[in-house]
Image (cartoon, rainbow, N blue to C red; front, side, top):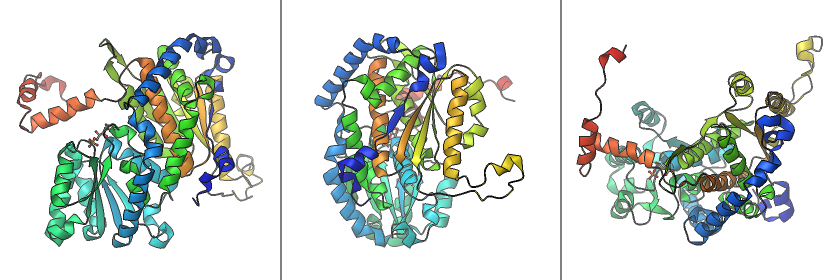
Length: 479
Ligand code: PA5
């Protein structure tokens, strides 16, 4: 990005805007939120702010400091990328959840949408990127059809170092690599990203002499995009990771504003919290840019896994959360918007717009004599997508459906860094308002443990007994 982000004036131009007019009663009538309601939550917000500040100070929100303390790590990453990038054709991420969604979102946002199909020189000399985040057998086998594993660098990403999906992929690839190139050479094709102390992966990495990058211990999976989890894959496909960190740092300053009306993350969280209390149990994120499509995937995990909780911090059963839905403008105007406009009052729709797209394309001035086509002549797709976004906002407004808009002046590393950080702080703040732990995932652990028990993993005998007592399925309900 030519370090343009170092100029204060440029940074100000690139500031994200959050417009929540259509959340308010002034616009959507009694289906909205009034200023008085916001004021009524002032004390709750004060408590949440204090809790956030205390956690940050006491090292319980280490992800808040990543925009500052990962700059040295970024240097190490960049020198490793320089050393390796010409040696490989493809960089393959083996990870799942927080270890895959961030890398996917950032690369898709910043790079050419057909990045892998471009000739290498048009990729800036960087390798292709693949993300293997599932254990669907077909997907991995078919990956071997299109890459030469001798020309791949496999990045095993796992904070716990024990996730079955990731570790099984690693085991398959390790054996395959060693079979093809021998143990010593195979080690050069594997790089691990994991915790410095805990889990099997760090032990294996040390024993096998794999290059390793560390995820800071206090940073959980879905908050780890600004650690080597996200920075390494991003740097391997030419993303300016320092600009990404700078964008996050810029948003961190905005998110420290004590005035909730000036703090986008706190306001985002509060509006959603009030929305939940009014029965808005669904959070739709609908970017009007293909480049941002995977940001909604990443958001969906962050919002769902962080806020969907059974018990609150006082141990009370609350079963809270808001179901995230991923949508894409304009594509989903022809799929889901009918429901958003006329269906139940159970959603908050967050549009994500872009002021300046990377490219411009103009519709030719033909068919001027056909009314339904003539008006399009001479209009750019840039204008068309923006007008359609405004029109959809309007459709929701007149249906009195809560909606808001986050606008990125451009999609680049700096604005994506801001976006990630904004949603992360909003999630943390929403967790405080809901009085839940936004940083654990006991529901996911239950599924992981049941998998281990089904396989008879040692240490899971009690869980296996519990599983064996589950109700047996009845044939009458299987057709
Ligand atoms: O946010 C989370 O903690 C999870 O989604 C994890 O990222 C996911 O389960 C993968 O875990 P790990 O990185 O330990 O392999």
